[in-house]
Length: 289
Image 1: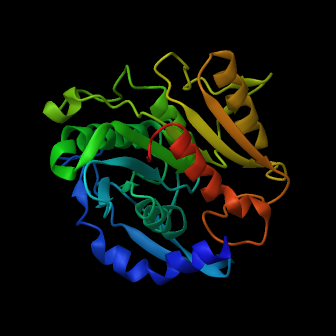
Image 2 (image 1 turned 180 degrees about the horizontal axis):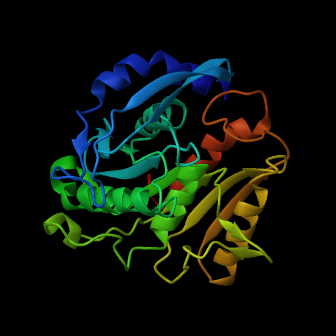
Image 3 (image 1 turned 180 degrees about the vertical axis):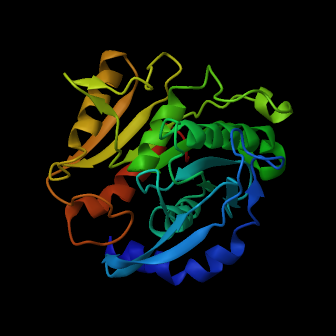
């Protein structure tokens, strides 16, 4: 795993240059937004895996940045949702670095800059869900020019971004905003879902959050979780159980230690091997071939 992280760091500059310019998801203004915010980026004092973390907030103009896969032909794609409690985005640790890893696998990565912080008077995920649905529809609508297979378009997320990915996976039959254009007439259902230490998925009595209405449209899902992530272990276990009860293909890799917020970085524990397990899963469900 150390070798993987070092490789990612060495190619970081080239990969960032490879990324396309950000694309505004709602050029005429995002639904429900009345005041433009000035985005703020800062370096977190605490380090993860010996590296700092870039924290982004005050996002009112959601966007996507596409990292095209270098592989020839038509490639799978993944929407990437960084975490941060719906207040900030851990933009490098759970965003840019993840996109670089996906590119190594031949997957086009789409980094979602969704709206944060939480909007007063709105559910924590309401505005971000609008952004995620629009992102999936945008990519699928433009799949031909992006050299993307519209039937191999997934979503993944970390912590709060995991909640966003799971909510998006269970909301494809009801768009969270009024149709704007032809993009919104394109399906916003992800074909597969990868959740890394997801938050907020559980409810009391072994239940799941009410916004997670599992149905036959819920895509195959894989989860990565550690036992010592005390605040969120129930989030993964309860959701995994609900998927199994509903007959949705689900995979869980549960590690003894590692805590929360490690991303792809080497923190010296076995859970750092999760990208290898994810690659195995991508092959098992025929996302990469």
